[in-house]
Image (cartoon, rainbow, N blue to C red; front, top):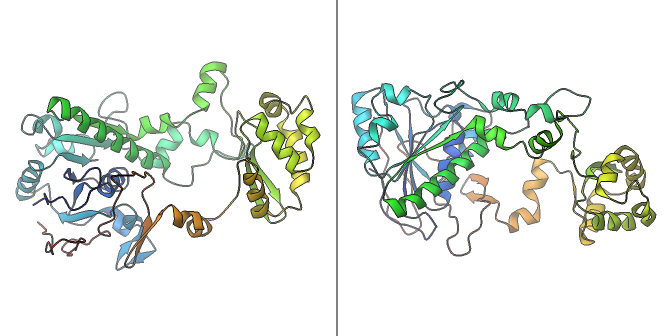
Length: 387
């Protein structure tokens, strides 16, 4: 049974979510909803979510990949191919406000429990479907995976060095953005239900999400008709918005306007650069970026990346040293922003959205089926069941 108790003051307290999704986009959506107070019950197939095995590294037999996507969820295993499993799922649907699923289109319909088959039975249920390409159209119902969508949506074509091959972004950006779009869709549907009393289908497709990330490249192409090209770390429209090498590593300069550029030039001891016609405006700097980067590289060749970045930031110029993952997660500001969560042996990324009156909460780490959990101030709920 789903837990109806409100145990924290977070924004979605009292909202019951049935997360029957797996892999990344759907589970990420469920975790965000859970972080903000929803009671999330995750249903896994008898063999478990595939990402439990996506390692190393592993902890207690569970891969880190799974651990990063499934906190604040209770866990149960059901076999939807069985009549008993479907009966239990229907009972849970009757208690839920939101259902999140990412089955291949037609799978749940084959079992007799698809959205169209269930909409009249559960009129208040918000059904969130995460899919590769949507349910119809030329590619409708086709399977979709993050890297394949990165390739097909044009993202790979504009990622990488100018003289190199197209590159996949080094994280599952399409999956994660699709998960966030699913969260947005669920929240919109909950707001609409407040007015109408009716649930609806929310669809978040990887393909749509991949295309939605193409700014400013799509806008550039719509206006100019020129195919966007790879520019490495440099921005296609702004300069200097690029990495420049220092004595001990690269620094990223994110100069967005003429005032910031003039300040940069002053800090580097070359205020005259800001007065030169080829550098006086962003358009001119973008046109003469090769010449400008050579000057910046010479000026920064003996600088310390960390110290220079801090100096520039102190003067109002956005800049940053290029840090690795351990450096980023160990930074004092990361701790200040509560972006690393610790619960016993579990560590994960914190919620990036901060609400002053209804903050996110972290109530329990990712669980094994049958594992007990305790919440602050709550009684032992006992082990979850399997079927």
